[in-house]
Image (tube, rainbow, N blue to C red; front, side, top):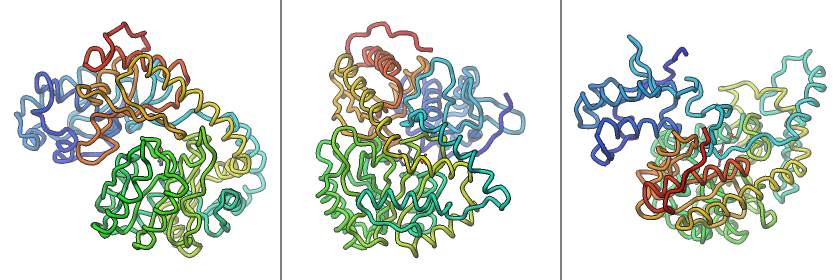
Length: 481
Ligand SMILES: Cc1ncc(COP(=O)(O)O)c(C=O)c1O
């Protein structure tokens, strides 16, 4: 398989990801190879990344060049790297593809992908595309670009906000290629290097990396899924102390904890941050994935429109492969953000937008289906964990896509990730959800896969936990590869 080195990572960056080599268990070269594998599986060293030269990495990690050469050899032998004359050592995923950038293809037989909290497509997707195809001829005589979004889609999105209690006009909405794209435009347009940005801690890795990518500084505010409204006071204090310019918040079903601010909590938090001059980027990726209780007012309700930029999209309700998202703020700021977006891409794909019109108009039906599916899967995963791993502490979330499991003291999520991968279960280690080296004592388990896969994954985890410590005595795990 040809390897295209898509990205070179400096020795310092890779060393920072690896952490202290003295902390790696076993022979140093083997521990190092294992750590690189974990980083590839976690998406932090995407397939196609060129690893640093042996000498440079040895210096950055304060270890010998022989150790690095041996680690690279192990990675090559196991199919995790390839060395080419002139292009150095490039990370690969065994059986994967260099362009997958950390996202293993779903069709690897037998692999259970719990590294991503991303469900398969809702059944409404295909009919929506069929309808979009029927509508397409009405557009093909024109240029096909729709900067800011097709008017009909913007209107459908605005209507949905209005129905949820946040009155919105279409000119306050900009269509983007997903929620990540919408957040990136906000960061690009409104943040300067050195700005302080409040983030929930733990939080969605994409949000953390986005803030860092523009040179802004993360101000982590702890989230406790058992007491989600504690965030209000903590964020108030952190905003005052840090002089934060922006907050990136997921008020409904934070990824990974599933925490949800109460109606009163979000009202207080919104008011206090606004009074402190902090613009809030509200990520509503999972806002409508409430599984037990009903909807709560959107975070931005009751605030001046320019106090927030709310981003949302169809990836979680419908499918990640449908690259449709949006942002919503006041009309003047929306126009400015649309112009920034337009410098990068003239328009989101027209066929996707046409399908999205139908899907947004029919979102209630899509959500009813998705909630039923997620509720069943969440309950099955909670049951399996209670039966096989009762020492793991989990606060059942009332929505969203994932459980955030507190591991027993002797168990490391990095070790679980490394141990589960060869047994066909892909996981994301706790540390990707935090800053520094926090959260190796936690594991996120998305309930986005079918029940039988979730049960099989828990069997693998129980067996591993028995070996690594902190679980039931090991019982043979079913073969899932
Ligand atoms: C909180 C959160 N925001 C954004 C995204 C990315 O969404 P999209 O695929 O629409 O870019 C995700 C995906 O996991 C997410 O969990």
